[in-house]
Image (cartoon, rainbow, N blue to C red; front, side, top):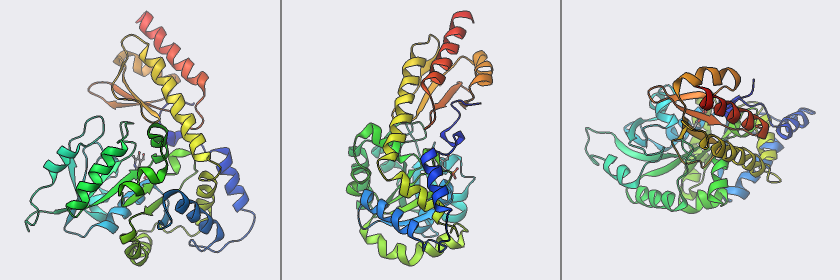
Length: 345
Ligand SMILES: Cc1ncc(COP(=O)(O)O)c(C=O)c1O
């Protein structure tokens, strides 16, 4: 059954599956010393800047947690939004492996600079953890995007306060479709220090990459991060099967094709559900997610045909997510069903 549960529910994009099959035809050295890894790293450097250091890992949680482990000492903390994946959906791994999280109030998934400023407390107080990193999610868990100006001002403030900026970019490519810029313009050029770059949610079978962007962190990353990754059991032996997918994903603009498809269909979904009486949009549509409240009695029946998640059980706010393989007819089918409910219930 296809639905709007998550881009994680979709299979592997055929081009990326093909890249795995091609990489399967021969032997290759292990642990990232293969040609596929070299070529994928070159693609990341093209897109994020030549200084970029790349560390492939298996999943997004590891990408986040190891980035933070790299950026913090044991007595330090991370400012992140109250609705962030880091805070709500990683089973405490960031705090177990890296640092205490200090949650910051969010609006439509985003932290404002003024709320960040209020959350930075007790600098120099030996009784309190010292905030060392600001972690943003782009696009946010509510599908909204920080603008380039917002990222820039957060980076400038964080750096002035002696902090680093990390982006959880599990779906970073989707933000390009709203911000109409390059990866480098959204990150490196604004002062972002480290990115967790997502693959799995964007059509890969699995695989994520930690990107160290700040030139002054590159030397330390080379010395430290590979050991941190191995100690955390996240060094893939057959790295080529992650690298070959990233090489293909970042070639020939496949990444944009996939992101444009998911986001265009999310817009179609947004327009469709918006026109149905009793269904209310709750957040701006800026990536591949649409957030709506749906009358409670409809939800069970709708989910039997098109699966999706109820995001907030109290308000029946639901998350509808598209992916690389969503089709226009699935959206029409879902919207027609909603319309039938609104006319008969
Ligand atoms: C924004 C965000 N960050 C990180 C992750 C973690 O990814 P994984 O499930 O691969 O650990 C997810 C997964 O849904 C996510 O949505």
